[in-house]
Length: 268
Image (cartoon, rainbow, N blue to C red; front, top):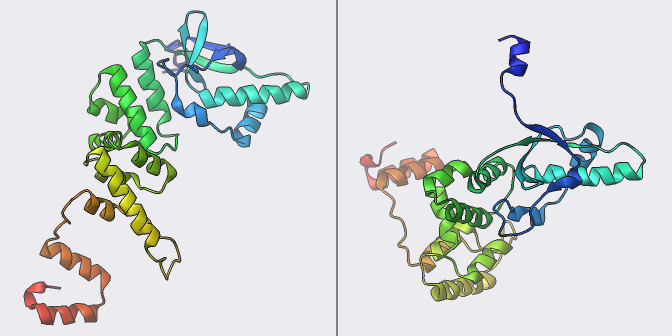
């Protein structure tokens, strides 16, 4: 294909916007509202880059009445607004934002927004769980579709959703970072009152436990401790698994001693 054909092969609806004219929904009931925008922190590097080069990567918008609503590119729009404030103060020309218009239902575009941002955002498992639940509730899609949107497997989606079954106190501990999300999933199997009791008990045990002599770090709630609190039986390991673990963790001399004690069938 020649260059002329390449540039005319497919046309799209592209526009240049003043960033102030772009709408970033702040109504939580709006299908394109993004919860993470509440905690967006603009980096100086992004603002500086936009001041120098403009918004290099196009954003995606949809037409909603007379407004252009941002589907993907909220951070770039906010950074462009800040860049223009500084350019205006310096008496320099303002930049505009290159945008591509995309059609589709609100639910389809909600999925586009999630898929475009999931690999860029450092969300916690609980935040991902809330997003996944919102996607499933809005679109009526199944967990397999959610897995595609979030770029994970179906089991991960199920693990995230299990976090939403946790008591508020357990969720709060996950948000604070005092309870690992994996440990919280163990507690989610319990009734909510029992979750809180188990959490309080583990927190007391951890508070009373001595610090590690080697790292001098305070002990934390572990997944193993949470599994025990949830009534899970410890996982029994087979002979071959134990052998493999021992071979990786002990010296040749120790292996030979164990082989002599346990018999030749212990193996090398």
